Length: 222
Image (cartoon, rainbow, N blue to C red; front, top):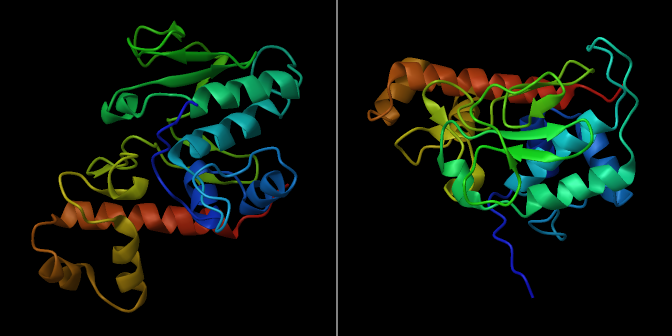
């Protein structure tokens, strides 16, 4: 039996916000078996690999109009093969700030990793027919998923650290509790006193990211 290292554990709302996919769509896919959360079934928890899979499923299932020609949605067999490959990725890949995980229009995976038997790309630049599912991601409904490597200059997401939570780089301080404190009336200056090891820039970027994620959760599927 092959045991996969999942990495990350996100509620449906959190997974939707980070992926940039409407949460109603995420729950619909889970109910109908299109993309069942792989970290836990009860309670439902999505893994870091599931975030990439959510973006991939969303992108491949929609017709593409931004290229020179009209491209129909990919078939489900192609998509399911892509999702399986994404879930089988070695989490060591995501320790690199500059890793690329691209998905082609045909559902093939392209990587800049040396340890995986898949097609590779030389760097971050990929052709228009390939989407880097780690890069900032925009949905048709107005959702804006952040970069899943460095959601902001001072922030990081590492699947095997803090259960994949966005956090201030070089620390174990997640961004979400900072936003909760801000909502309770704490100013940035007061947060800086509570967490003197975090720079003002990092605190500001943490609040900015969480505001973006909160806005994503309010948007409904088209």
